[in-house]
Amino acid sequence: MLRRLASLPLRRPAAALLAAGVRCISSGSVEITLPLNFWAGKRRTGPEKCSKDIVYEPATGRVLCQLEPCGAVEVDQAVKAAKLAFGYWSKMSGMERARVMIEAAHIIESKREEIAEMEVVNNGKSITEARLDVDSARLCIEYYAGLASTLAGQHVQLPGGSFAYTRREPLGVCVGIGAWNYPFQIAAWKSAPALACGNSMVFKPSPVTPVTAVMLAEIYAKAGVPEGLFNVVQGGQETGSLLCQHPDVAKVSFTGSVPTGQKIMEMASKGVKPVTLELGGKSPLLIFKDSDLENAVRGALMANFLSQGQVCSNGTRVFVQKDILPEFVKEVVKRTQAIEIGDPLLESTRMGALVSQPHLDKVLSFVDRAKKEGATVLCGGESYVPSDPKLRGGYYMTPCVLGNCTDDMTCVKEEIFGPVMSVLPFETEDEVLQRANDTSLGLAAGVFTRHRAGERPGDDRVLLPTEDCVCGDGRCRQPLLDHPATASQSCALRQRL
Ligand SMILES: NC(=O)C1=CN([C@@H]2O[C@H](COP(=O)(O)OP(=O)(O)OC[C@H]3O[C@@H](n4cnc5c(N)ncnc54)[C@H](O)[C@@H]3O)[C@@H](O)[C@H]2O)C=CC1
Image (cartoon, rainbow, N blue to C red; front, side, top):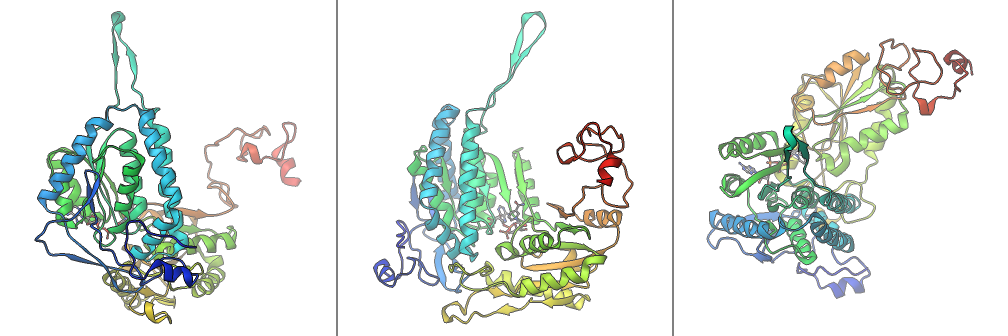
């Protein structure tokens, strides 16, 4: 199938690829020469005199493009454009805004493959995952478009026939700062709620993955947002700081690491600006002996190896009840070793490249440290060189399962942000809850069991019932919908049945 990238010149002519019957883009074939900044409705070049950052293609290690980090002048131009657009957009009704956003969602749908391919080229994740990221971005825009026309204030009756009312007003120019693991999706997740409420946005992607946010800017423009409503400025720490400190910025929404989040909160506090921070995690996954092992194994693989393990909410501390530990570990290792690593643009690939060479080195150094601290590498944890010569410079590693882990090890305490699973045995529920919660990076959590808490065999703790049971036994905790007993039957009868 031929897919032509409208905005991104290809190194190899599309016709040649079409003749060969392959997709238009292949790893190693893309070079980006168009400017990656976007404000006031157009792509813009960065400052003339600046030291350029090199952006690499993770699958091959090739140079993809050069980034011109924006300075104070460019940041100011983008914020001014956003301020102007805010004047128009904020006066539109929610329904009018929703119409434009729905149009943007349709355009994303029609360009799904094109966007997903560019995400793969810039980020290194597999094409099957990148397509889902694009879908999630579109769904988010659709969802907030749906909310736009429901935003309303309140009317409050006061004594003596007086009344008060509240209005929901947009803040103004919002800044979005994104991480590199979900570049397109983060840009959509930040802009959709802001735009739905009548705000405008200046978005700064990670300098490692600058490419697809500007595609979103073009999509919004094509959908009909006012010029300057969604802008993209490229750069790293300095550009980000300039945005956070700009006096015309009303709010900052950030996704990234905890240390950067702390700095952003500090900067925003000087201007008394609200912030939304989505930061790192070291989340627990609890696998009880009564769980469906097949489900639990699949869950653990997904919670550790999706996007090469570069997911903030990954369940990287996998606590497994001792009784099933050998069986669980055997199955997890077998399936981890079977994960197909390679060219992220191939449909068969399950794990692509990590985002950069420094990040790969960092993840591998965590594995080394784990070994020194007494963990056992049950599989993987090594750099990997695919057989395809064009991929030899890419940033690949074999997914790793670490056994013999203890709670005090670095691999268990710190966010690795790579394909490294730490397996930890446990005996009782109370023990595992205490250990799972003993972290300053508790972003998410997962549990595999066939019983809800309080229902596990041998667990006599009383839980507040969520639904009334029809059987008349006050101690019954069976949820109504699952209950096989009728109103005339007792729980004892149900148990005998
Ligand atoms: N909770 C969540 O939803 C998510 C959290 N993350 C977290 O992000 C981290 C990985 O992403 P990275 O890009 O390496 O994080 P990072 O914190 O290094 O950078 C994130 C963004 O902040 C910018 N930045 C850096 N210093 C700044 C400063 N002083 N002022 C303003 N902006 C600045 C960067 O240029 C980049 O755009 C991980 O810790 C991960 O857990 C990633 C995705 C989702």
